[in-house]
Image (tube, rainbow, N blue to C red):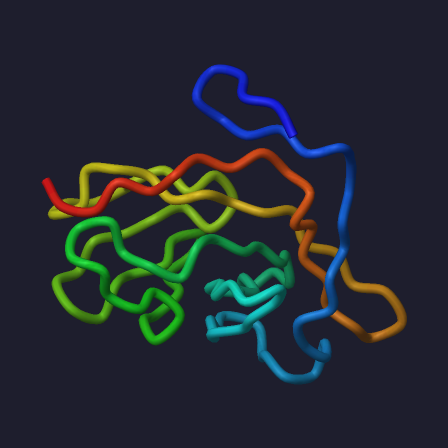
Length: 125
């Protein structure tokens, strides 16, 4: 693992199964885990899958317990919104982004790529 531009870079894809395709209806978000980590897994109304860290950078709220509105996950605590595909903040009070992860579906199993580079999250602000 090496550090580049503040991000950690892994050796390549590391797909981990986290759910069944039927476990989440289009337009929903849920909490899933892999390798001791927690993620907010979402499926847009159009059927696109995305995943981000399951923690709001405003105050540590659980994003996977929020709602998915179009491409954004809304934190159930104070309404901060994060893009499901980039992790970028789309609405205050959060100011720091979360990590986003590629998602694929193979034979009805939803997998997250944990081999992507990630940044240490900043909470607060």
